[in-house]
Length: 66
Image (spheres, rainbow, N blue to C red):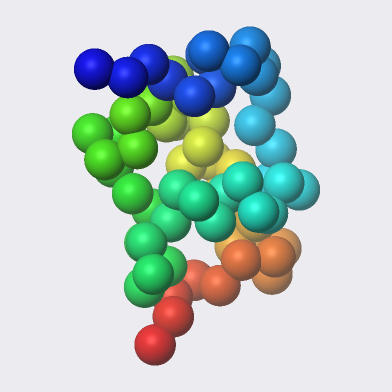
């Protein structure tokens, strides 16, 4: 089993400004991938979800792709 990417790299803050990183944790249709698929822990998944939603609200990421 692989560890959480953010915990292994000692990344404390997951910000909405890091759009290329956030795109790695979204599906091709624009949905947020689950923690089981990404391999992230619960706390990092929560931070990731919050950052993606903030980036969507500010217009940095799309809500959905067609």
